Image (cartoon, rainbow, N blue to C red; front, side, top):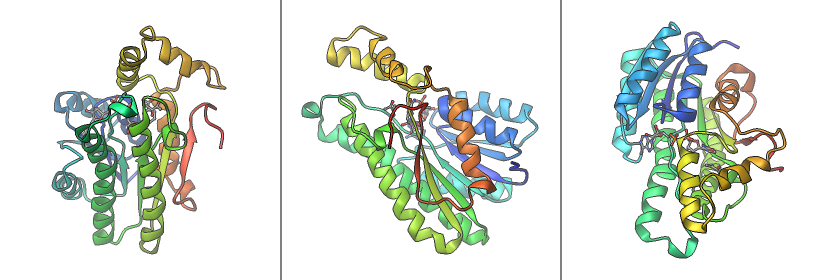
Length: 259
Ligand SMILES: NC(=O)C1=CN([C@@H]2O[C@H](COP(=O)(O)OP(=O)(O)OC[C@H]3O[C@@H](n4cnc5c(N)ncnc54)[C@H](O)[C@@H]3O)[C@@H](O)[C@H]2O)C=CC1
Ligand SMILES: CC(=O)C(C)=O
């Protein structure tokens, strides 16, 4: 599969799964607009993309702010000659007992994980339509978009919402040649899981490391997931072989949640 001549915007590209996706898309031939709050780390990923012979643009933005998301997509169009693939990857976790969740907790995580994804869908769809190009929108969901997890209840609710947005956007945007799908990873060994494990220890009294080990022990393939495992599937979603798929939020979790 080749993405030569394509331009992809990847949010949350400074580390973890987003970095993995950016590097894999670059290996397939795409040029990249790398978006994150963390500009310093973005610079490192830019160097890695350029070492693969592709163009890379680094753009600081907060995906929860609609104008900033539209602005990064516009900059990608202006500086990289268009946009073909939008990966709405950035997101945050929140570990808390449901009975302790505050209005501020709700607002913050929904604004980033749900509104941030919607702004990405809107900005990409507008750009694809202006260019009269078909396009692919790819959202970050999770196993937590298929099953609600204890102490990750509101996080799970945001990922169920991403699944809903993915289905509705697929239906609304199909007439314009735009497909919308999502990837649902399981337990990926990134900073997000280091933080989840630490907060689970505080919330439940478990030993540090125990929650991560417990989740990983349930994976049928017997190991934690890597960003490369996720990126391989996202590259397929970004390429022509997935042209007949839309509206799906697909589990790519080593066999953890069975649907
Ligand atoms: N790590 C895991 O096991 C899983 C992760 N996911 C999802 O995959 C996505 C990426 O996760 P990880 O790479 O593990 O997370 P991470 O925490 O390692 O990296 C997330 C990146 O997003 C950026 N970011 C956060 N808020 C932002 C904002 N408002 N605007 C712009 N950038 C922002 C951060 O600066 C960071 O570079 C998230 O949506 C997450 O919910 C889904 C399932 C499992
Ligand atoms: C971070 C995440 O989505 C889970 C449930 O592991």
